[in-house]
Image (cartoon, rainbow, N blue to C red):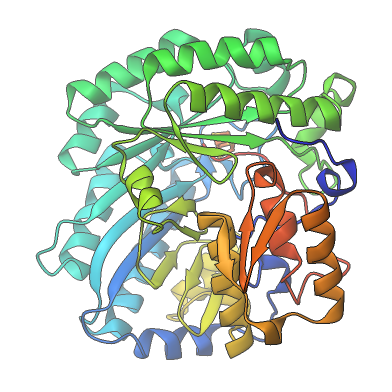
Length: 443
Ligand code: SF4
């Protein structure tokens, strides 16, 4: 049973999909850093690619992603042309160095694209960066826009993993968040993928939605465990209409309060663990045979912009508007606005617009924070612990959230939902920040 600690739960902390987090990015880091970092990639370096498609066929009211309505075909065509030009620019700078391990498509909804365009991009990436390797390919899919043609397309493109945005199967909740997708629709999607040999499927679920109760969450989980996706993420909805005006359509009076949200997260955790899923952190779950669960058993789970991953690449190149690249010495984000992004690329330059150069101390703290979130334990060098941090750690120990043995700090079972609070104690950029711990959801 997790303790409910309002002073920690209600305190916004970053999700730490990078360290320093995106709130520490600055505008004086950009294209020059991007070029230097790409030039510095050594031959044979394992490489992962992330492609952002900032369009969806239908926009959900709760969504906090960088996406807009797909609308006219010309908009998508122009975006794809820029994406292909960016791929060529990056390939030129890499000059054949780097070994492609993974390609991830996210958004938005990659299936807002025409299937033929999707196949063409995958083919281009594998030809340019693949050097004969067969990369893992994952794609976020909006089930409402999933067709038989898309099932065939994913199979032809040798996609290895698909993520479906499910959120909740409750019809009242679906109506309240502007996303109608009956259980049958997801059953059909699953059957169609499995028939084509794609068995690695992720579900994204949410708690803290309007009208959601533990009973409604449980009814959704009944269906989810029957369908048996290989991975599940159970995210909390954060209502921040001042940042995402589309959320104004959500009835704020129907949202569960902080204590109810916490109870839903705790119930979801207990239920999924009881159903045989391996917990990763406090809100991700994987079946025992899944590569993420196997990485967890070996202490090899990593964290990047896509969340928890078994990907061990130290270089992640983001392509497309708002995509973030991760290099050993810098984190760089492309222009967020798709129009501005297209303008940069059509001028023949990269689109890096903000980011952060990683000082040695940031790198050390980044490793420590990643280990705390992924392995729930980390070795803490004494020079990182000042008197204020010592007080915070003592407080966490007194609450039963962490244990200390020599220089090893471990997060206890009770401390799982507070892992980000513990991580934030080591964040030297965190003072005074106000960040929702989860905003909206992907596809
Ligand atoms: S939740 Fe997914 S499908 Fe809905 S608008 Fe956001 S990115 Fe698009």
